[in-house]
Length: 178
Image (cartoon, rainbow, N blue to C red):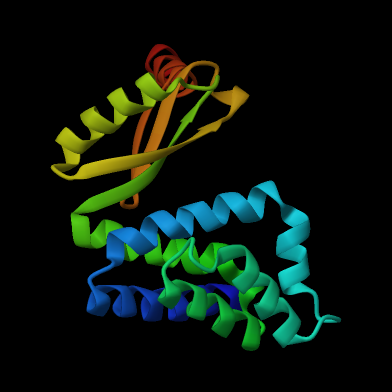
């Protein structure tokens, strides 16, 4: 629960700062880049999180890697996260920031669950159709669940669109045997 609160608090603060600076879209892209770097080099992210290394050493490492590559305000924000020992919550902070940007842009997020992995083209088609249904631009995150047998389940804004074969078969069973 604490991580959720930290992510929300810092994500909102970063969003407000980016808005005031007129750099929301720039920060969004740079946060995505930072996330990729932290994912691709987990040992560097571990270095920034480790409690045995002094904060100044961690900030110096961050400056060496990122200075001139990301906005100075975002680098300062990373240093604050290091000082406050909150860098481990980077993913939650970024997610909170992204959610606020999506709200600003009128984009709703959801997930699509299928029996087999979907291609980017298929996901895009489902996003377009779901967007028409909800009258909002929709971003879907794909997951797989082999128990569906086929079809998809889409969750958006607390609503479920269930077009799975399992649900259709259960409906047919009820119709035939009731």
